[in-house]
Image (cartoon, rainbow, N blue to C red; front, side, top):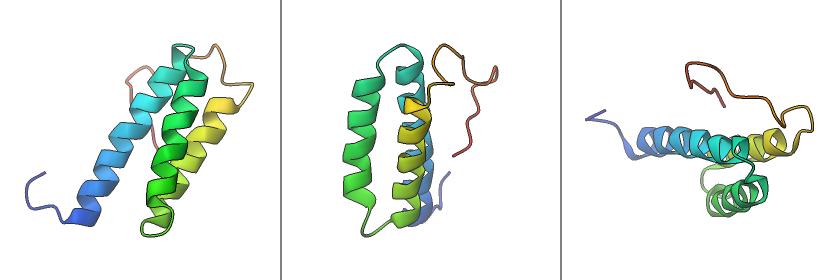
Length: 80
């Protein structure tokens, strides 16, 4: 990952953050995961709207009734 510019680095870090939030939600900590996602969204919404939208999608995923009790992809890859 060396040589990445700041925007690419932020996008990659946000992908890792979203994976962690979804894993937290998988373990029943949906409220905590949503609070963290909302904090991240608030930080990114003006200067990095694409990355803020990624966190908005995570919040919607975390609160989707169909998601509860379902594990993530077997290989751990999540795309948001």
